Length: 156
Image 1 (cartoon, one colour):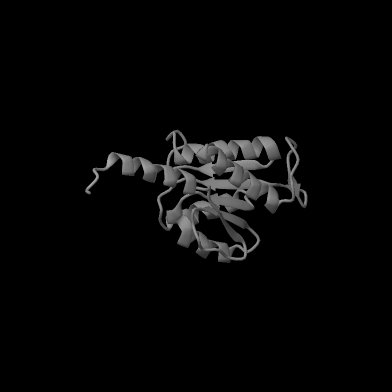
Image 2 (image 1 turned 120 degrees about the vertical axis):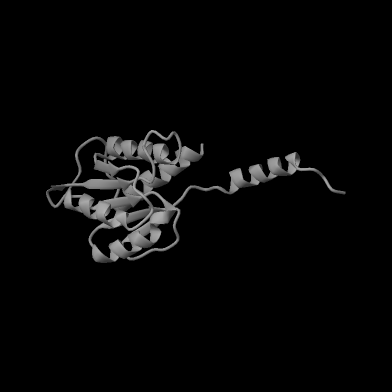
């Protein structure tokens, strides 16, 4: 359920940024193919965080017609700026950075590229062209607290 909420937020962010793209036809802006880049902290086969984001990437491509590119296993450091520059050189005009540790670097590079739209997962810093997204987690946190309480010893 949590993965589907994350995917929905990602897709909604893309659709809102580009005014409700239709299905399956290749999208263009000013005659140029629309390309979205995804930067992943882990391998796409990890079965967790990166896997869920990659499923969202595939759905964005299938449902919107936006071409996507990705780079997996990018460390949470300055290296991300080179990865993003490479994606921009490949024509990406939207970049999704999918790890909290990328935040400060994405803020920096978003200022260098004001015409590129950036999405950052789980961060709190924004710029004119950098938005953030994250799934709702209060319900699972509440339930995990109940389970933790049930597993602990009572000390009355």
